[in-house]
Length: 340
Image (cartoon, rainbow, N blue to C red; front, side, top):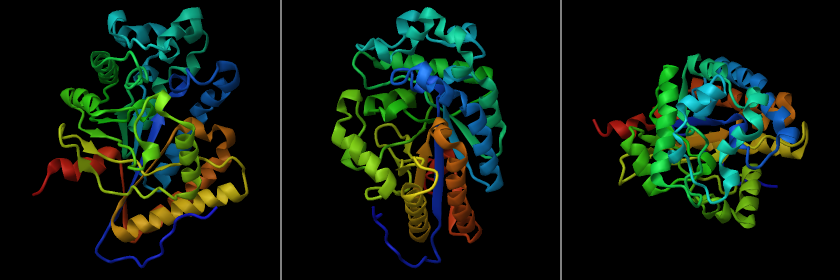
């Protein structure tokens, strides 16, 4: 596979941005697509993965945003229910499998608390230098699925704010679960004081849609793109969403960890992302890379090695004054402040 690479000399008057965001979900993020027997161990590994990623971020002075499902901040089922929206305000999915509240049946949460609750990991990320905690909603709610109302989405966001406040965490940034958002949902977010969100690349295959809209061509296109960078040309600076005033910090590239420890896919992943980073620095653009911590579970050491190779280049560009590392909130700061 050949990446879309443009080699050009770096200019002296521009500085690029590296933005990193991670979707921190535990099993809340995959409850409708994975089963505990097959995938539980991958989620359990997140307890090892997050400290290792944070160690790399500290070593290379990387700023990042941790988009965190609010339910993870609960210590147990009782605390989860204490902060959850009341029954009448929970999402009324037409497809019931999308609702995580069915996990209350059969004592799933009580039997596997380590797969759902980890306030200590949230505290670890929150206390690390230059790390931002963002909302990924309370229950990993899918805002575009049939049956979900704006008022239910609003109630879910309020539940996140309540449990986050109890842990002395505040955020004005949001990453939408499954990247499902709309102008109406952005209005809901803005009404609750959120002013930064991770938007989608402009290509048709990344257009925000519910599960029914995620067609095979779109999924295949994104898979190919993550290893080739053919369409990873969304490196524009944050911009203001006209009707809400929120700052869109658009995603550029999903960091899909290689499926082999050594080989063509691994080499391709590193080559593509390094090329995109260099282009970002040369053009004074913004490169927003994201992934889930549990994506590293198949090959933790290999994934960390690839990430470190990328961060070594990023740190070199930072030291040369060609790149800055920023969280979503930091990246959005300039456009939210407006002209001086």
